Each structure stands twice: as structure tokens, then as C-alpha cells.
Length: 197
Image (cartoon, helix red, strand yellow):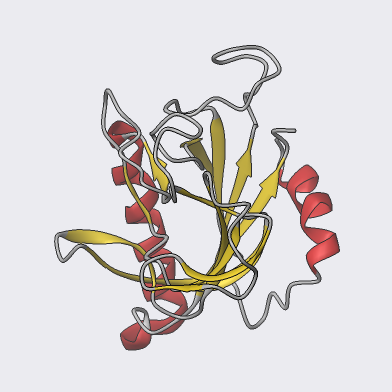
């Protein structure tokens, strides 16, 4: 995908680019027909794409926007819903290394095997059920390093380890350039575009 093609994909979101100069754009299903089973949104492989977009940079890496567990294998396993989520800040993932962490806002996820739960149900880990298996809350839906042989995701967006170091270094460099000492306080939205269907 070229930067011009991506800009066309972003138009419906009407994003204030002055307010959000850094975007983490994830496209679920980018490699849907060229990796894994044809015509299927596979889990457990890096068949999605992650584009880091700033005023000075357009960078793309492989990604995984699905849980590692097979569909329905774990009740409550989360997948981020498509949309504009101004939820990430650069911070430590599980206190270990710099990553894109859900620190700024809630989001909506779809949880496996929960569609029949009552609308409005509040669950201590799953959030508030909106219906149809969609739940709103703060879940720690982060963007972080995946493994070499696994996507290492319970619902986060992950990138394979060999590509991760370049992605996070670019994000940190751009954040420091744009926000100086306040770089860890700035919001970096995750925009999830779903092309898997």
C-alpha cells in the first residue's frame, strides 16, 4: 500500500492530523489471500499490516491484529473492533519494554463465545457488553513485540520480533521530535481498518 492509498483509506475517519500527527494504522486482512488459508482471516500468523504514519515518515511492517488462540478456543478472547481509537501512549508493556500501550482511552473489542451474554452486563475483566459479543472498556489492548514462532497476542496488535525494533525506534524518534520532553504523554491513535471479511 502506498502512502496515497492509505490516505484514501483514512479519509472516512476525518482525523485531526494536527492533533494526532502520529498514527498507528493497522489493516486486518492485508495478506488475507497470500498468507495462510485463502479467503480466511487466519489467527496466529502475521497476515496483517501496520503502518506508522507521521509528517516525516511512512513505515510498514507485518502485523497480527487477532488473538493467537484459534477462533472460539478461549471464551472471552478479544479482537479489537475496526475504528479510530485514540488510546495509545508510548510506555512500558508489562513494565518490560517500550511499546504502544492503552493508557489514554477505552476501546471496543469483540470477544469469542460471548454474543449471547446480556446487553449491559458488566464483567470485571471483559468490560461492559454492548451486544453481539462487543465489549467496551480498558483491556490493555497494546501494540507490542510478537515472537518469532508465535504472534504472542491475547488481543493486542503485535509485530514479529525482527521488525519490532525498527518500528518502535521510529515511533520513539518521531515522538521525541514532535513533543520533546512530553513525548510519553502524547496520544498515538490506533486506526484499525478491517479488510479480512
